[in-house]
Image (cartoon, rainbow, N blue to C red; front, side, top):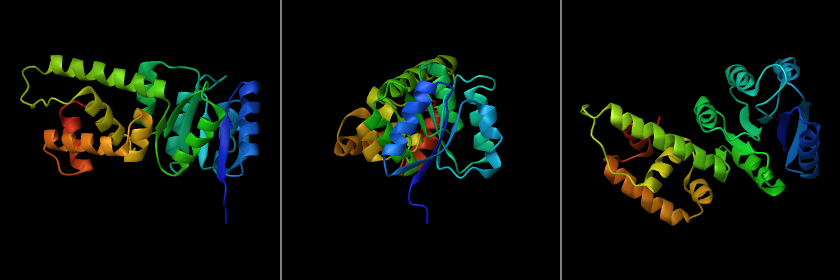
Length: 222
């Protein structure tokens, strides 16, 4: 029975590849089963992939990371994909998160935190580094403002969620639980629970699914 988390990496920088291999090889929770320097090399072996997580750079020679991610999501839906990049483009991050990736990690992340985030992804969570999370919240804020401006005459009711509540309902929609949200936002699970209770009241919802549905209808989340 497999007892290690199997990782593959698609990364064109030798320095970064060496770092990932060193980290994974030194931690008995993980096993590195494939290292590729371009998307095409990985796709040649896609039929035999057995990995749990693919760690994908975005700026690759030849096929770019975004296109590779689309193919992997389509052909290997059980494979969890985490972007590993130096790029912080706001709209790019937002589109990739919506596409179904399970993590967006910046290359300046510490070694210990990178391994911890891979563990979270394997266990079913979604993870974002702090700077990435802020980029998403900024994009959400811009999108929400635009929708409000474009729907002033619409009959969809508006609710007065605080900035923190908007952050939390969007993280809920990404699949994070109380503990993961509290870690991302640097507060206690109890505080997150209180915020969620307030969100449910304001959205007149009685469950996570209903709250997400209502928030989407109101343009609070995509």
